Image 1: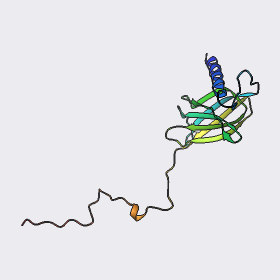
Image 2 (image 1 turned 90 degrees about the vertical axis):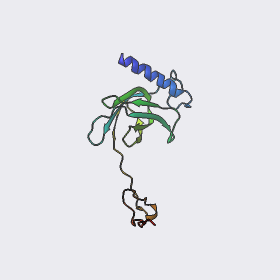
Image 3 (image 1 turned 90 degrees about the horizontal axis):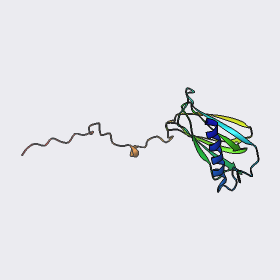
Image 4 (image 1 turned 120 degrees about the vertical axis):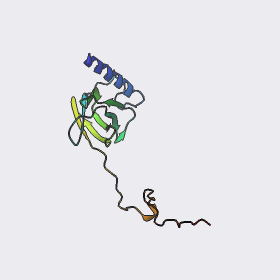
Length: 156
């Protein structure tokens, strides 16, 4: 049942990617006879190697160094895994996004019948400036009393 679902999904993807892509992945699914790869992705936390579930794995064909039209998004399961069958050989741009992690992106040359890509996502780092905080940019700290207390008024 699972393999039938994957085959149906792969056929739908090939049809979808062949429409309006100018042949980015496939001109027409019946005409394409070239080699294809079964893609497997594993998304892990860089710090401890634990899987990241529900990460978005976005794949796009690349032609002449530029991202071609078409593409698709896969979601990882509880084990940080996802995959798709029937991706034509060539350059594939892989982007991985997950809340609380830096976005990953890299191009891969797909040329094997089975391709496994493991991505280790890192937590975002703080941003720093080499300029520091300028005196004019400092905001007043409302938790501190003013430097000078207002003069006490006497009743007249």
